[in-house]
Length: 287
Ligand code: ATR
Image (tube, rainbow, N blue to C red; front, side, top):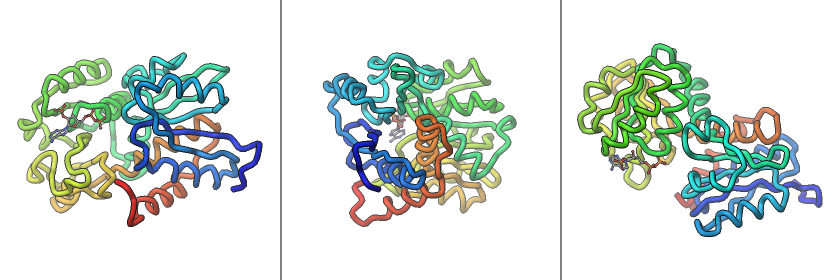
């Protein structure tokens, strides 16, 4: 794409950002859509977050993404939050609307779209267990609860965090909380098991969040981790007859939803997937 005086800027702010795959996906999407925009990742230190957001506003950018460690703190710099950001308590996407910065969270919806695209389970009859109770669990838990799943159990190493999240989501569906180490029965009874912890992520690729023996035929094993593309837990669950859903789809769809908000057009999901796979397979990819 030719960069001209008409070219617009879209951004990612985080710290670090050097490993992010978003610029690869976003720039390929803009190119495919014929949009004269560039997407650039900026490393922003926490004490300069407010200036960075104000700078983007002054530059007239249409929107930007936010990643670790700014997803919570950025909320204070915005004018409004949509329901997803308020309920999840974190923002990963900002859009300028009538001069106001509005914060959204597209992670939960991105997860749901990916799950529907790949496996399309009957969510109304799903008994779900979430492994983990951090930021990713809040996003996915909110999306699943909103989708009307039958029940939602939160299993976490620190059980108090699981209890707090279960209470928060209890407004939408039946919820409960258990310590991760005592989740065997809940895992066995679940139709959808979602790993939102970082256990099994590169470089600790041999670790699993729960014993593989807890998984069985017919269940869905869903892991938010995308490096490696198939975690040891997913591989083990598949060998035991579970259907598996890996983390790459969520990453693609949260970005696609951001594009759809910013430009009011459908995002080229297959092209974004191709860009992501290419980026992840580069030998020097910083992970
Ligand atoms: P994210 O935004 O990716 O969800 P986070 O908010 O730091 O990150 O949450 C990390 C989650 O992974 C938490 O649920 C954490 O459990 P604790 O709340 O007990 O810390 C979980 N987690 C991380 N490492 C873990 C490990 N080795 N075993 C079990 N759970 C782990």
